[in-house]
Image 1 (cartoon, one colour):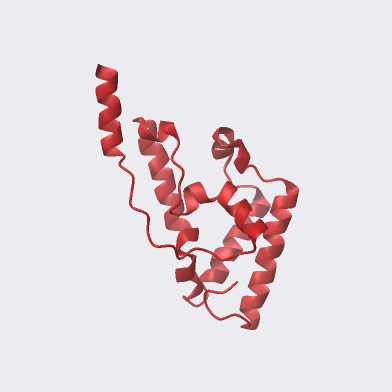
Image 2: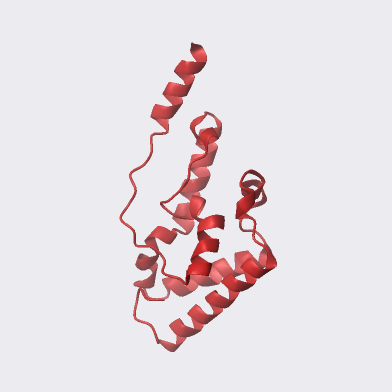
Length: 147
């Protein structure tokens, strides 16, 4: 009885946030798939909340991590970055740096989400796409919001 009350209270405290309109990153399908698998739970408005994200005190930590991740980078708001001069390039530069260092995705996320692990081919594909995208931005070849 007490356990049921705790679960109900936790569920109401952690009610799902409404999804925002998609202003999502446009990328080639293989790049997008890697990002969705390895990054979107913390860095988009398309978080797949695991069952334990509804249980206090873990729920407070998980939701705090996701909120912090979205503040730093939100793929669902990518078009906002693309229309703000220099922001898209800075975001891409940071992603490339974190990929190279191996800091993302973090080990504790991979421990509970093994499919988010990136192999060398995944990292190379993302790095190549980022380099190409940054070259395109530097050349002014793209209008804001395009691939």
